[in-house]
Length: 337
Image (cartoon, rainbow, N blue to C red; front, side, top):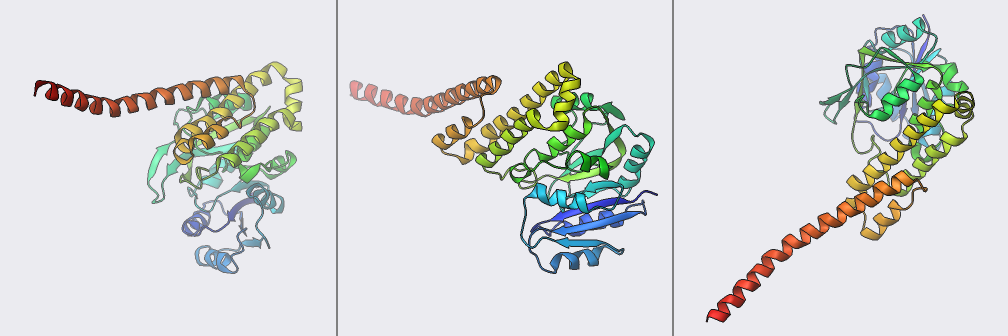
């Protein structure tokens, strides 16, 4: 049986770590290398937690000083001994058949580079709030996957946890080191899937714990725009992407357009839903104009601004009308008396 490396990166979060470790311990696939890596200078606390909840042998590593998240993930990739590799974040969970099911998928098809389980979105208490689409095909080409991804009909919230061949992930350079890892997992998936195939397995489950930190909702706008710009530049500069663009120019033009649109729509959505509440008007306007010149983005931004102006005008009018009516009634009363 092929060795599978399950890598758990840890920073300062311990509430969910025991459950993540127990998920690895409960796998029905016996040939697993567990690596737990401390990136938060936590002393002996992390290995103590692992020993309490993992009955088998494991490898522990520790960075003397914290490194960026993408760097940390890549450290785990390069130290993996397994032929297959999966990253399990310290607050997420996997079903007991996750490894065996996805190894079976990759073993039976050499053209599949990314194997994904169905995804359940869970909250802090572990309650399931959303499930990925059950209508997804078992396999799609990498190009079909990007179409599906950009359509937003799949129900997945993150691509960070998947099973892949360690060598293939290394050969494409691992995760690009964008600011705080924003869009780094997206870039890795793009590199792995172009010209290859992606598999969906409905019999196994990845449980993605969605909260402000895990979804990047606590990220400040300047860091988010930095990661967004890095991903857009990646689409024009990565060697593997450029090679696909050279051999499939027409196909890549359409895929790139979809990926760019999805990326700026994500940023605009954060502007409208999160940063509008957090930022003053001048700061929000500065954040909105920090994006590179993408005509479709700025057209959508203008429409958003117009909606905001209309909403503010209506709100102000509703506040003014009762006051105006009271003044009118007061004047009529004085006229009569």
